[in-house]
Length: 329
View 1 (tube, rainbow, N blue to C red):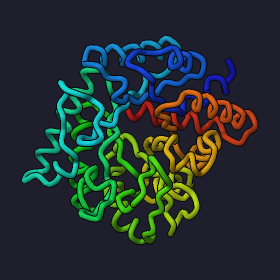
View 2 (view 1 turned 135 degrees about the horizontal axis):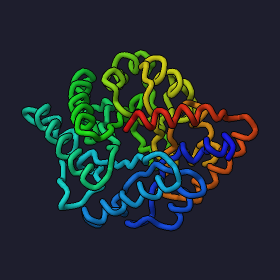
View 3 (view 1 turned 120 degrees about the vertical axis):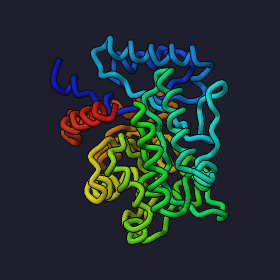
């Protein structure tokens, strides 16, 4: 097997599964395309026993192919963004937890319980906490998902969640860099434009992310918004200014960078899916998140295989990503 075969672009994907069992399409992507990172949604969950069996089957399938132990992630923020039904613990929204009388204690308890329940079923990464700064009472769609509107306080509370999850053995993910709290449009549906100046981001929006970088959060997740003052005309996930410059240079973060779901309207209305996948990698992402459509995964893989052969994309980036993935777990 050649070096390029070993360093297959399938290493760079995190994909959703269509059902509660390991299906043929996912198994084919594992065996033929070296995909070994996954995200769990409500459609994949029946109960604890089934969840544990699903995660174990993913691990077994990956290891049988000589692939790394998989990252198995989930969005278990609490409130409106939570994938696990009863009897798993049902947590309030992050903003509600942050507004409790002793939010540090409440969030520490959330992190401890969440980590324990995730590890019991084989999930090793929680795509949380949200570190966006979002004002209250302005109708912004991120309001209840974030920890507040004061950057220092969000950093302090975010630290509690990150350290609580990671000390218990679950990788945490700081999102949505460099800040989605001021966006009016939801990137799931459309391409939001954030019209705040670069000074605001450097002094306010990025402060919690700098904290996360300093304490060694396992991953950052990038935002799909357009940041008109410093990365105009392109979603942040696809911008080297946002990913390569702000994350790596200004935040001095050397960990894993995961895109938000590339199937969102913010991306798909901007450019073709395979082109966006390549652009996100050229911007500096380590993992491409694709939550639903395996046909899109295959189309992107074909484009990346061509880019790798043509020298548009260097195989050393796959090595870098694999090293960061291993360090994240």
